[in-house]
Image (cartoon, rainbow, N blue to C red; front, side, top):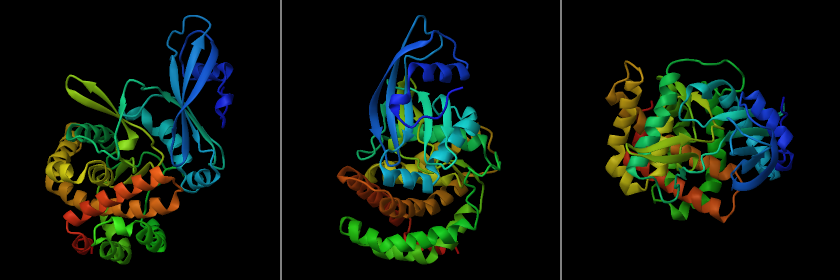
Length: 360
């Protein structure tokens, strides 16, 4: 059986032979591998590994994606502290088999401390990545929401696991998150405030004061498995005659929560402001219709729209917290600025501070 590895150099032919055998993929033994870095995220490294075989490869892939914890000490610690590696491995080990929009996973392991993990995933090299800064097209956003609806519907109003790795986001969590939000808010406003709408400080300060009531209200409704970082950078698209089809990556924030966290997160953060204003209602309708088609009952359209509006504040909260907790370079700084502006304008368009009154 293959062991967890923390260095791409350890992804040897012998290691992949054990991985593929354990995954039930028959074929010739690998004879050579070549790893190429294709991504360096906030908490992880990603490589494309091409595999050569001794003979007929059979069901074994020509290439795979290898994902490991970041080799940057601060990012690795951040990933461990937020249990990113534990959550993503848990998702692939326990939940992904029922989520068609997740990529195939041939291997998933994490160490006891949650500091290192290894994933071997299907290589979707022909798919195109979502464009976070440029924004998704309305058709791409619709495809993404229909894809996440598959996960939402499967686990709607269920508790799929009681394992410790799954963040159940109970009421006890929100005072701690509120304290964190208040703690990082001054630094966020100092860094990003000049680039954001003039109402930003008032909105964020009101959110800091009413955080627990708002978040408790948002959680008081149907719950399901959520991605919780649902945005363009974590999507791949394949074009079909029927339109784009989305595959959802990076399940490292998997949790049980209100599904609208994902809906508002994508709509608010991954479309440019004008496109979002023009298409938001239709996109929420598409997500709601996809839920109903997959068997969810008793969740009406008006409730879905109302809770999606309330969830627009989640994007503000996460933009503030994530931008202050994760180390980033100039590119990352620009990305967080874009996300913050989009999410803040999203919340402002739905009433801003007035949204908090609906949470009481």
